[in-house]
Length: 158
Image 1 (cartoon, rainbow, N blue to C red):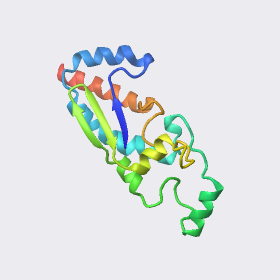
Image 2: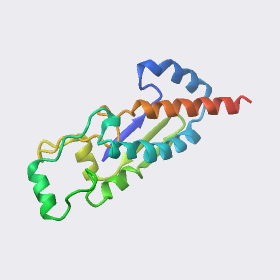
Image 3: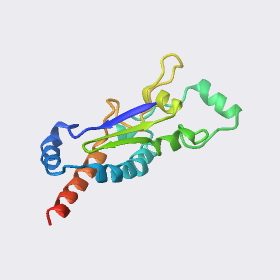
């Protein structure tokens, strides 16, 4: 399972903006719901399409042994990290825990966790597909969140 938490204080450069906005928003739940839709459709998809670049690290290539297994089983070609589609589907449909000032997204797929964090035992390198190495969100997602919070504040104060 992959457990990603989105807190109001993630990045030093944007901390003042987030603090100012968070003081003006008493209940983030409507924004969190929109954020989950945005994150799973845009950020998770970009993670697969860019082979992890959006999360700060391009995925390692498959090992020769695994490539040979894929060819033997008829899985040559196709998008990396997608064999059956189950792992990507789980990443695009996380279980969410939404509170007033906190969002937690849980990807409930063992394969997803193995690929997100890697496995020394199975000799699988980490291939970030849901969050950055420290379980925070990429800057692009944080900027979306700030823009949405700003719009929310403007709409409420009209």
